[in-house]
Length: 161
View 1: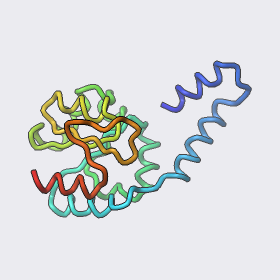
View 2: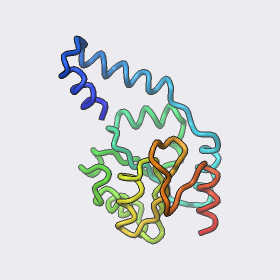
View 3: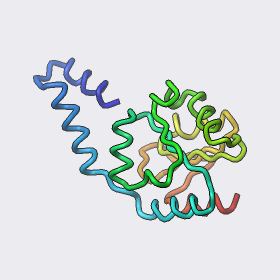
């Protein structure tokens, strides 16, 4: 979380104000947020097909609501899960289990896509969920089991299965 990073930064003796640093980060993050090309079309097609969509984020609820509003994606998701929702965060398996329960879906019919292999891809696989590494926006080395390079490639993968 950015607050933890700012705390460490200030602990190094930097003369700065915690609240100003975190405010600046969050303000710049929202100003710079932009969707990946093709994302909205994919979300629209998935929801039109009746597929249940949820977001699981380690960001707090307020920050996540701001991000979703900035992107205009809130209308596509039945559930936005933050650490406050179930009292746990990724990679804790409970967050995936509780999300599936809330959507009334099984692991076998669930796909988790994310840019962090250690919290978005591998942990869901341990529960029998298909984990897909979104290489777009990721700095992680490409997953060797299942990875996609664009939202459209993810949609094609979903249609194939």
